[in-house]
Amino acid sequence: MNKILTIFNTDGVNRHRMLFPLAELMGSLERHLKECQSRGLPAGMPSNISHDLCRPIGWARPSGVYIAKDLARQVGVINCWTTTEERDQMGELLQKYWMAYHYYGVQPYLSELEKRLENHLTAESGYCFVEGAAIGRTNLAKDMYPELFEIGGSFVDKDGLTDYNVLLQRTKQIQPGVFHETTQNLVIFAHRFFRRSLSHRNSLNQYVLQSFHRAAIAGAAKPRLRLDPNLLGHPDSVRSVIELEHWHGPHFDDDISKIKSGVTEKVSNEESRFYSAVSKTHAWWKNPEERQPENLPPRMVRTFEIEELVEDTTPGLPNNTFGCRYAHAEYDLQQAVISHFDGAIRAYDADAYLVRIEKSIDRSGKNADYTKLFRLDGSIPVSTWKSVLTDFFRGNDLIEEYLGGTEKAGQEKSDPQEAAEIPVLPALSSYVGLALTDESAVAGRHVLTDLSFNDENACFSFAEVGRGQIENLMRSWCASTDIRLLSAQSTTINLSTIVLAQDQPLVVEWTQVACALADAIYLEVEAGRLCKISVSVRWVVEGIETTLSIAGAAEMVAQLLNGSCGIVRPDKKISEWIELFRDKLCQFAPNLISSVDWPPSTVRHGRISLELEPDITFTERR
Image (cartoon, rainbow, N blue to C red; front, side):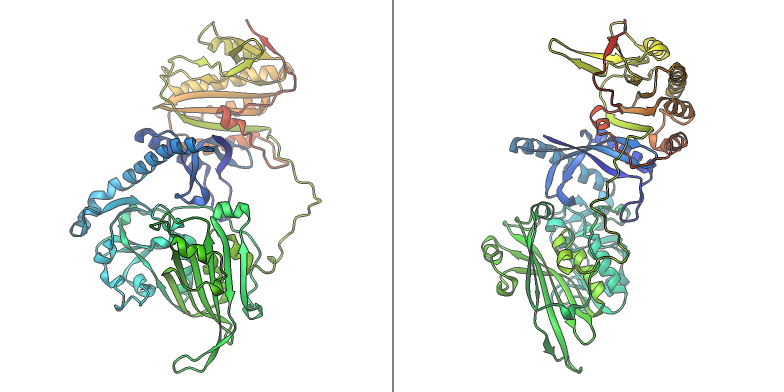
């Protein structure tokens, strides 16, 4: 396995102007471990390429939260398979995870859903948890709401697109692409072709559905949208799915009249191909042509077509089919607006795709199964069109590359000669690690032999106990006289982990340990024997092991230990007190002069360990 140490999230404002509070970073990890514990799963979840659940690459395990004065970082490891055998082994775990995910997501709402759909369920019906708890079968939604799906009816055009204004009148949009129909109290979804890999495994493309909605309610265009005929959900179960992506690049130049006619081909580089699964993208501007609308004067129009060509077959389509996103638009030269715009999926069988991928879009013909997904007709500003277009092709950076123009106004360009700031370890930081454990907790307070030493003749574990007053304290907490005790001949020490007694109130245990450690650290600092220290305290509650480590300048560590005596509550959820704990850390920590370099060793060791001087020696303490 290839192990990647990574930051999953922070409590800073991200590029989408969202902020996840520290309490939520901690709370999400606590809830995740409880879920895994109840479902009989190891900690973690599948890791996928570009949020596409049809493209798994390994197993992601968040392990804890690293806290410094600048940010809190939820960190962990991603185990990626490198061999077929590892992939097959991991595949069993992934399958078990997703079976549990859908079962436990739908179960609380299943009986109510079945009651509301009882006359429409068949042996084919199945459930899944998408934006909410849902039941599906072929044409289930169409049977329940025929007026929203029947081609040729009052609300549906010849391509199967529903009048969006009517849809909004008859339903309440809970989130982009998710509509609550209150009469039968069910949720209708946008078509699954708005999902990655065109599969119900994935979430809806909220980017394009949101930008389409904004264009629709602006009133300048007649909007139409394809709905999912096979899926209905429970409104109380709907929750927001947050998939963070950052698309970057220059602002667009909206003067389409200057674009030359002809075909442009953009080819993905290796990195882009890996993430987007797109081989290349074809864009075609046709020569201006005169149109004669009914009862209107003639107008000059430029037609635009764009299609992406994918690398592999599409999991959401049957029979080894290639699904390619496609868009078509018409630009009115006199009014300088887009007068028509639609997006679709072109699905090719293997033989047709081998022909298509070798031809230019203007010579490829129409040898595909065509499914239109949305349509806008009217006076659409070019900027609005480009927003919907790029959002529809979410993940395909060739679209922005093709449409790119001038740089953002006022955007600063980095000076390649300017030396980058080197991240530094902060003077005071903390790490809260969480893990599932099935080990029986030792009743009394004790010190772990969590360090090891290797030489040519032997390998042994030991506990680092420091010197002077700290050593006396650590010795008193050692549960056995057989433990091998070592002390680093250094003013920097990494004390071995102290485990709180399980047969005493944990709050009292924490207070006694923290205050005693703080007093001993102060004495060693005054004696000139200690500059920096890392301390680690562990406790176990209901099968979840928590390790709180604090590291940095010794005097600041002592201040934080004393200051947190009334804050840290091992008997409660960490998310309930972690914000107050961080406030104390920020109170004692000095201002940062550079960005913080979080130590990846926290993930490997489950605690913070300070780097010692080269060629440091250890003395055995008998």
